[in-house]
Image 1 (tube, helix red, strand yellow):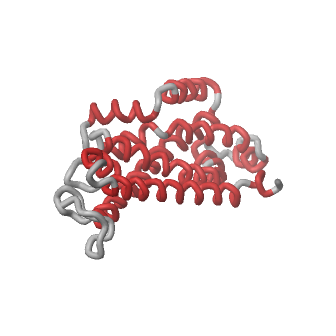
Image 2 (cartoon, one colour):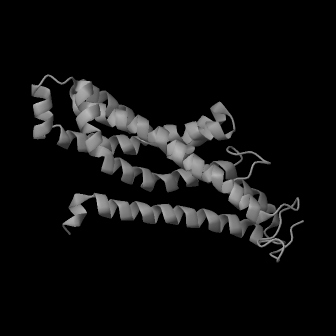
Image 3 (cartoon, one colour):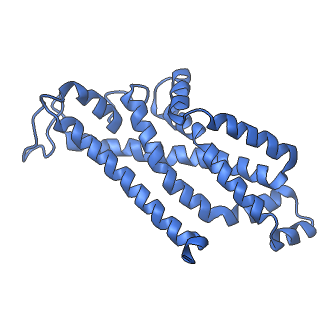
Length: 231
């Protein structure tokens, strides 16, 4: 128990003698699934809300914009903590909490782009041919926002992973014996003096994963954003 790195256990063992490397690899499933599923929830809500606000305008835009401002006025992590207190711990509730607090930024960006796209000629042509508002939104506006949506997803997944690690670190997310990087770092606090590598290695895995997604997001933004191509 609590042994250092060795040939048998490359990153050492935890307080129960479990291999830390195996638990880090196993915990990556939680972090990556939370990032993907929670962001899928946030993007779904944000795209629908932003497209509706930008397309319909008027009272619909005003109401949705006020809702976005209310949600955005709270720090996301604190809002997620409140939701976890209400729903309880567990991976599924982490999906819901993180996805529910992360949609406002998506909605704002999609609304801004839809406001520009709805004035394009092909949208006017579709409207002149008798296309309904829903048909125009889902056939013309949202498909032309795909590049923005892809960039948003890759840029926001690191934040979702950090939120999950923070919730698990506070004891509100993934519960033992399930492996999670945040939960491992939290448990390792008691052994910082005797076995500091116990907390260092899950932290390194978390940092490298977040950094990797950030680099991918920056690269995709450079490729998909036509404004940056002209610089």
